[in-house]
Every structure is written in structure tokens, then in C-alpha cells.
Image 1: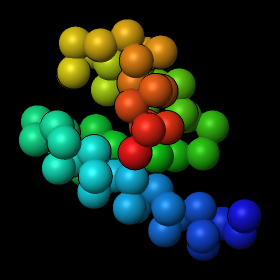
Image 2 (image 1 turned 120 degrees about the vertical axis):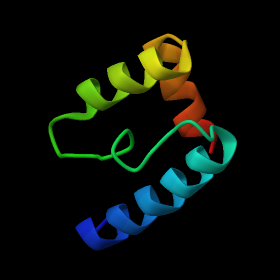
Image 3 (image 1 turned 135 degrees about the vertical axis):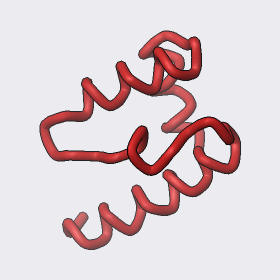
Image 4 (image 1 turned 30 degrees about the horizontal axis):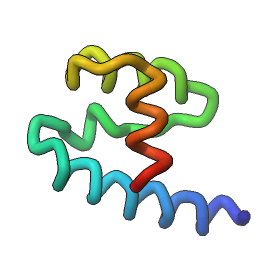
Length: 61
């Protein structure tokens, strides 16, 4: 998948996550290449879920 397509896909997922979890902000969902683990850890803490649960939520969207 091209980088532009990946970015578009993440933007769509991000919008769905924000709709499902109103407490999430753009800053919470900021994806930086190589920093995925840090983002998921932050989301897990904010949502009161495990990292595994967060990964499942993201994949399901």
C-alpha cells in the first residue's frame, strides 16, 4: 500500500475511533512511523484497556 493510501486509511480509522470513544483527541491518535507502540500504550491508558484490546479495537474498525 502506498504511503498516501495508508495515511488516508488511518485518517478514516481515526475518525471512527473518535466517534466510538469521544474522549480521544487528534493528539491521542497521532501516528508517527516507528512510534506505534507508544501511541497504543497511551490509548490503552486513556481508555482503561490493555494494549491487546486496543489493537483489537483498531483492527475491528
